[in-house]
Each structure stands twice: as C-alpha cells, then as structure tokens.
Amino acid sequence: MSTSIIEFVQQQEPLFCNALTDQTITWAKESQFAIQAFQRNDSLAKVAMENPASAQNAIINVAAIGITLNPASKLAYLVPRNGFVCLDISYMGLMHLAQATQAIEWGQCKLVHENDVYESNGLDTPPTHKYNAFSDRGGVIGGYCTVKTASGDYLTEEMRLDEIKAVEATSKSRNGPWKTWWDEMARKTIVKRASKYWPRRERLDQAIDYVNTEAGEGNYFDVPESKAKDITPASEDQLKAITDLMLKVNGEWSDAFFAFISKKFNHQISHPEQLTAFEANTIIDMLRKKAEGK
Image (cartoon, rainbow, N blue to C red; front, side, top):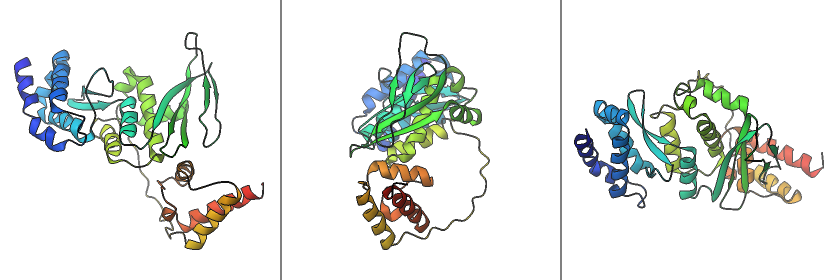
C-alpha cells in the first residue's frame, strides 16, 4: 500500500503546482503531509485507491484554495467520506483564509453555554462573553463569530441553538461529522454564515463552496421560486440624502454599516451604488427616525 500511495501522491505534482494560489504553500511540504495522512489512515488510503479521482481533486484543492494539510495547524485534513476522499476544512481553516486574504484582520468563533454570561453590545462592539472554563458550563445554547475588519470595525454574527440545529437537520453530512464532531461543525456553520457579510475574497468563497458541495457539508433545500423584485438602482439624490443624514447621526459608510445593511436586505452590499431605490428609501426612513430621536 505504502509504495502505491506514495507514487500516486507524487504523480499529482504538476496539477498541484499549476493550481497553486498561495506561494507559502509548497508541494514539497504538502505532498509529505498528504502521504502521512494516507499512511496513518488505512480507510483513507483504501478510498483513495478505489476512487483516485476524488483523492486527486482533494489534493489539487489544497493548492487551489491555498491551505495547508499540516496537522499541527489544524486547518485542513484529507478524510474519507461516502466513498470519496474529501478536503475537510475546519472552522479555523476558514478563519485563517479570511485573515490570509485580508477579508478580516482578526476573528474568533465560540459556543455559548447556558451557565456563561453573554451580552450583545450593539452593532460595532464585540460582545461580552464570560465563563469559567473549569466548571460545569451547562449545555450549548448558541454561538457567535466576531471579526475585526481592515478599517477597524467589529462585526458579530450570532446563532441560537435552534438555528444551528436547523442547519444540522438539513445537512448532507448530518450522519457524518455532525455526529462525531458536533462542536466543530457548529462553529463552522456560524463562520460560514458570518462570512456572508465580510468583504468578498475568491479563495474563501471557493473554500466554502467546496465544503458545501464536494465535501458534502451543504444542505438539502427545496428552493422556492423567488418573486421578481424591483432592482431599480438608487438615485444620486437618494445616496446624497443618506450621506447627509449620516452626518446628523454621526454615522458613515463603514464596513460595519455595509455589514448591517447586507444582513438587513439579505445580499452582499459593499458600495453605496449597489443599493436599490427601495433599499435606499428604507435606509433614509431609518436614519430620519434616528435623527429625530424616534
């Protein structure tokens, strides 16, 4: 087994090097990490020999996404899943990619237990989370992901336990890693949802798409046909009105504000020109009420 799996990994060098997106990831190191993973896990090696295309694809994605298989880093692993070799990217791996691509400067994701002290502190301030790590914290009641953007804003995404459970219930991997690594999958779920409001980065988007599709961690959804909506762009007068009202309430077009309106309107907004006329009117109304103290 060892000789054949070593030869198989070595044959992937040209494809790996052609797909490389991060020069800190090297074939010399990643090939050894891959060989070690196969040698330490007979089930993984068996799946690789039975389905070499999936193993090849997983190895290539290490290069394409730009993430290391170094077990000490705990960012990504080669794992057998439903007859395929998959690149399993941890929640720490997703956070690492966000930092490496400068989508964020810093971030953390934690689960909150029923005996913890947790308090949300508004839009642009990290939450307060206190707990005794050496006592019974009780069951998990939710979790959060807080990041700091390049402009210094703090963005926090929170998920209740029932929201996490809803994702688990519809997940294609609910009988796989959700059973064996529930805490890690819960954190990954929170990070994936939080990332929707961060600046877009191709490698991070690719990583999330990979774990949702080829790694089998996505969800079964019956997607209803959406109603056609008015996408008339906001006018210059509307954008000027928003800017003027922001001055009255000491606001600005910050990363935190873009994250807030992205969440409110359920799509990525990173520039004022991406607003529709309807969305602009909604923001104007909201800022007017704030300016009037209502």
